[in-house]
Amino acid sequence: RGKRAFIAGVADDNGYGWAIAKALASAGAEILLGTWVPALNIFETSLRRGKFDESRKLPNGSLMEITKVYPLDAVYDTPEDVPEDVKANKRYAGASNWTVKEVAESVKNDFGSIDILVHSLANGPEVTKPLLETSRRGYLAAISASSYSFVSLLQHFLPIMNPGGATVSLTYIASERTIPGYGGGMSSAKAALESDTMVLAFEAGRKGKIRVNTISAGPLGSRAAKAIGFIEKMIDYSYSNAPLQKELLADEVGSVAAFLASPLASAVTGSVVYVDNGLNTMGLAV
Ligand code: NAD
Image (cartoon, rainbow, N blue to C red; front, side, top):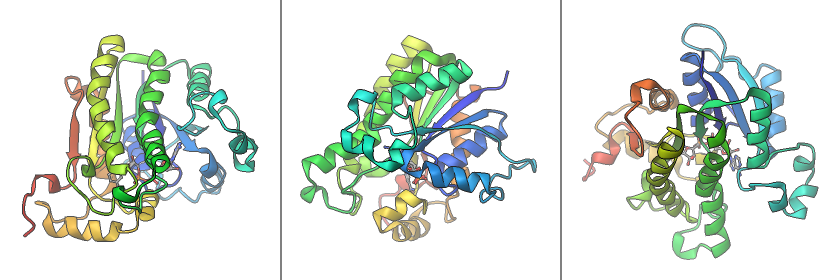
């Protein structure tokens, strides 16, 4: 039987989530996506109109099939958590069952179980502010969207994950080294995500024989990264200073995610795996 993957955090064809979906599809997995509610309409319309057909092409020439796209807002666990103004917002009112608990229930009703859970989402409303100028609200929002969202997803999906399954999330080296400009508590959020990877690997390993790993990825000019404001500078810095002087392709992160989700990585859990052309190993820019 082929594996089934749920990938949270795909809303266009530029980011890591899309590349991971392609790598998993290429390895024979069935693809389910979780798309942020405010981005759902444009994503589905673009998909339907064939705007992504070129980037849906897999190495064997076929097009990636997306079995179903679920609306998701990973900062809300249950309908009771959703504030009135969000409920009333017309982008949200047009969709339903998009809290984490409801999405897991829908996937269960539609397909029964999954094998692979991917978390490829982050949000920090004050990311452009230095940590020293970040509000409590902004900091907690970054943690909620970028770290607790993974705890919540695993909490709700674990009961429908087949033993032997795996999860992968995306982190960034700003958790362990200072990256000026990656602000708003996003560096804190990535540190939490990495620590949680270790603790959840233990808990989900014991409870459901599920592996939990995270990929510390190098810079990519995704939509989310462009919002931070200095992604081109980071890409240039990486190109100049990394051991491997080449562009980092989203597909290279996709391949490692597919490896981590596969039986080839059956003894790998609780790990932070660097996919960054080796930049993390450098101690001096040359
Ligand atoms: P992206 O824009 O493709 O992905 C981020 C996604 O998160 C978007 O689809 C967005 O709609 C979604 N999202 C935001 N808030 C959400 C919410 N509350 N509920 C559900 N979805 C929500 O950008 P990306 O850079 O590929 O980001 C994917 C992951 O990779 C993130 O965790 C990011 O921190 C990480 N990462 C990115 C880089 C980089 O340079 N781009 C480097 C290291 C790690």
